[in-house]
Image (tube, rainbow, N blue to C red; front, side, top):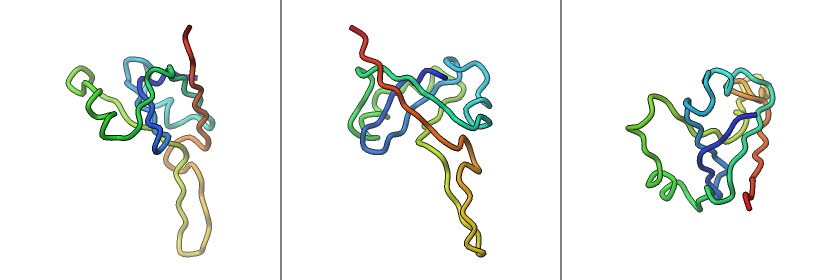
Length: 95
């Protein structure tokens, strides 16, 4: 489980900053990833997301939107070859 800083409603992408995770490789080497994002940090689209990011304040950050899918010419589907095999985003409403 890791904290997400910002979530995008249109595509399900979550911005994760390495300062929140510690070791950034855990985001990509784990089989199942759970990200927790405050409801107040959900924006409608990527345009709004980029206006809220402060890219100069971190060395590394990325949007994660779920497992990758690829198929070679033999029609063999591989899910999660470039990251986690599944992603669960939990929206937390802090009252």
